[in-house]
Length: 328
Image 1 (cartoon, rainbow, N blue to C red):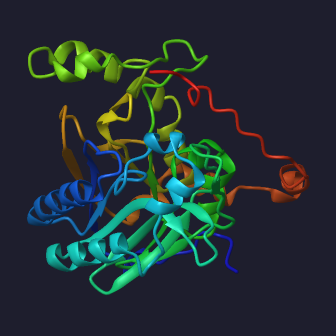
Image 2 (cartoon, rainbow, N blue to C red; image 1 turned 180 degrees about the vertical axis):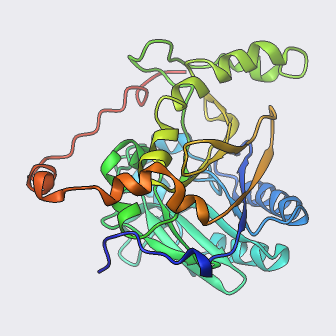
């Protein structure tokens, strides 16, 4: 297996990627797929080659914390034979874009995973299972990284919490990813972190009359200001394009702040959704930045003989998610 980042940018063409945000309906796949189709049609009309959506964009997310195993199994689907995968492929064929979207997966043994897939007009291109799921104890963790091709670019996927473990981002980059798609459902949740907390749902409901108060919450330490503490560093340190996608609006009893964005290998935001509603933002990514960025040089300067045994020593993974048991 090739573990170091190798590419020939002379063979890679610029790629137009759209990252999207929309208000997801809990367990209403038809409505969510309609939103996905609408955004793909509009993004395609603006020249997008790829459209990326958030974690569990097909089915909704936080409501699943309350589901029994039987209830969760009932909404989970096989991949690629399930209805949602086939619907996404149909949308990709209609709109002539590559699509990344997610939902709960059920395998042939009725094991449940949090999956994110990539499809195009020819079918399923890639499937990734979240490595660090937590929303429901009946969801099993994935056990591998995924790197695949989109129009000559090597791409990886890491879902939400997976990106908070820095080793996952570095490993995916070392496996060859030029682009890492980072679907999330995040921000505006309780936490011991100063400034964190829920957003009052009434601010969302009153957003047309008072956008200023909502924007203050969305952009402050509850939301975007926290994201800026770490997300650009994932792109900068690893010399990759980070495609961050996050929902906006109601998510079960919470309010999410969107701000889906694309960050280049220099750690600069090159596209961002800023509407207080469904939106997408498009950036053209170019291969030259992959070698020009400092992270490329820093990766080449690594000395794994110093820390391979330290990083690889046995460790029991333990997740404690501060907001998971918060009440509405």
